[in-house]
Image 1 (cartoon, rainbow, N blue to C red):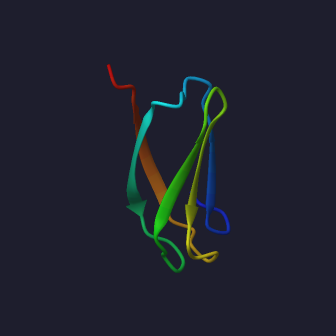
Image 2: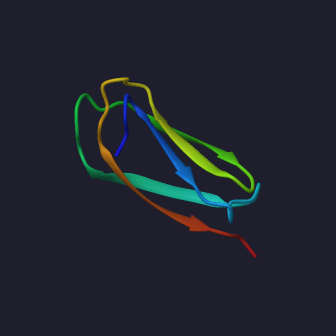
Image 3: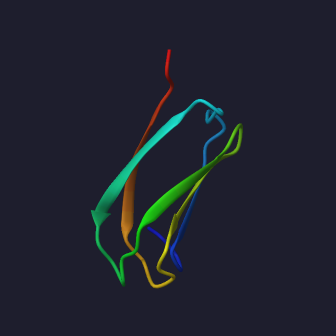
Length: 65
């Protein structure tokens, strides 16, 4: 779940080429538009344009061939 519009996911398998697919699994608070930033070898962060967004986010990682 997002906290103050931010969700940090630790996952050392993330690379610069990893595709992060995500969607809202459960709306919470005031929803905003979502974006993500990857940090290879560390994980990724999903951020909402609304600091009041407390939605639950589901995600899957895809590593292209």
